[in-house]
Image (cartoon, rainbow, N blue to C red; front, top):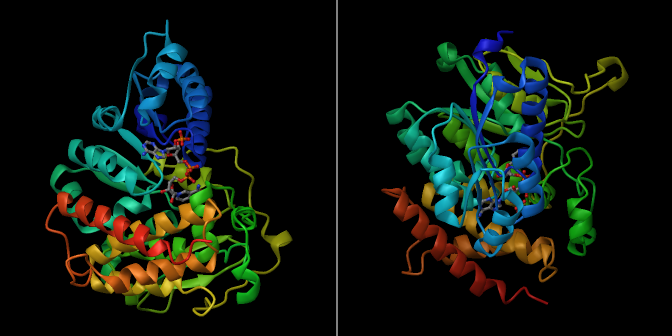
Length: 402
Ligand SMILES: NC(=O)c1ccc[n+]([C@@H]2O[C@H](COP(=O)([O-])OP(=O)(O)OC[C@H]3O[C@@H](n4cnc5c(N)ncnc54)[C@H](OP(=O)(O)O)[C@@H]3O)[C@@H](O)[C@H]2O)c1
């Protein structure tokens, strides 16, 4: 462990969220171990939670704070008055925060809304600890190209991708046969379709293992999260969707596995605590100590794996099809899912309607009549497809609203 290899200038986008807080927990712990001055906070970003964002700003003393929702601009100014901390509101302020030079930036904004800031980081270089999988789902190929050009280093934070990142030897990439992403199966793993039909947002969010934000919790319950992760993994590890298998593993102890040509399978195990992959991405290529609870393998006794049920969880198949159709279809899938999950959380549609609506949007195709397929030529096309798919989804949503 070398303290001098720890990144020194840090930004956290999505600071008030589940991943953002776990990240700041690691940073506070590192400061306590290595001295307050060992890490410099460059920027903190959130959408609307002024109270928590300003409390974090008082604690971490960043150079700049951005809040996306302009309705909270004055509240943020009031809360930071007298601190000397520069701040701003609106999407431009979020992009300014992301563009500020930092050695390591946590991209943990929720949804496709995080793409513009991920792009800012990719353009300026440095390490991008990427939790915001939707950036890769919508613009994976373009982002990988941008990072290759600028030298920005993508460090996966999703626990499964971080696991693969740890066990996939780039020098032996040709010998990789298959990647396995594990899924807990979520709260409805053993539910019948009839039970799932009447599932409430509260039940969907009550994840049996992980504590996460509302949207990703619903995605975990529908297995759309694993579908998005499959697309994410294809981009991160330059793999085809056929090379990526998903297995249900209810204990969530083995997070990812890589099988090599000789039959060996290497896996990463760890507690279901996001601070472990965050710490790994934070210290990469070194290791730092964390206060996370250790795994007790004896107490665990056994590990179960099972194939996902495509009938009860069609979202995974939809993501596989979208990946085959290209990045444009993936952007449409993600946009439709964001609209559907929002409507489900607002109790406007049922749980099973989420995948049904996404399927409808993929089938309905582009408003000009053609299918969602191929690769967008630039980021503007990604934003345009995202907007069009949202319009499509909002129109088709009406048939499910009760
Ligand atoms: N939670 C996990 O364990 C986990 C694991 C792996 C990957 N991820 C991924 O990490 C990302 C964040 O997940 P989460 O569970 O941490 O979400 P979350 O708890 O809902 O937090 C989302 C964060 O993003 C901010 N935000 C939302 N929209 C924004 C916008 N338009 N502009 C600026 N900031 C915005 C929110 O601010 P406010 O609080 O002000 O709304 C909050 O800080 C997602 O892409 C998710 O898929 C999460």
